[in-house]
Image 1 (cartoon, helix red, strand yellow):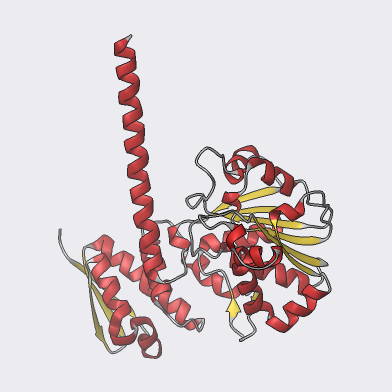
Image 2 (tube, rainbow, N blue to C red; image 1 turned 90 degrees about the horizontal axis):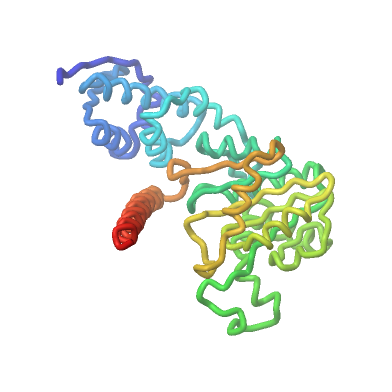
Length: 339
């Protein structure tokens, strides 16, 4: 195809941020889109096939808008925009992510949704009584829910925070762990503690926990309770049974908000046990007061390698599903012919 070129203005004060150290950001865009950038003063020429040139222009303009907002451009922003290049996404929506600051960590770092999927998830938590956050590792499901819970608690929108997880034995037996019951279940709840320490601070967390205003407990401890005026987070929900999920959802009382997070691809349940998360998503999908947010590999905000790992597993699992479907059809045909 014929090569085309366009020239866009790129202010010099934003070039180093957009180009990245040793031009790594710009080189990644060039390689991914098969285009060439040539910089002369504050003019940036983009050369390549027209569709790729237009995609490159949009990405550069989005990065410029983010840079003007004071964002330090990293691999995460570049990878996200490259991943979104074939989707009809308004550039303004990406820039608006920077305006939605949920809270700050104890180190002063703002906690914000970094992708449009995360923004949809955060808005659902704000507006709905019950929100399901489903997605692969690294999409911020638990961390963002924790930030929303702490913010609601500090604003006195709720009187307490309740964090729970099913203490499923993923290969390691609880009975072999040292200490009393609390010591045995603490390792399963450690990710919740880590997020609380980072956002709230260890001293504030300890003080509120001693007062009973923050509770971190295994899911089994929820049975028989009614949880009013609380922000409740159920983490690792893919490891609940249907009975446990129903038990949890029916604990929610007046003035409460609940977030259920899980990754349907990382179940630790026995093979013959259905996941309560899968069942709940089918049963509750048409209930208007309940929001189901599905995050994808595009929403992964950990190291870029995690996004590649998630994508590789998705491709592998799709192939396995197709293979199993094909084998089932063959077996059914053989049974029909045998008759």
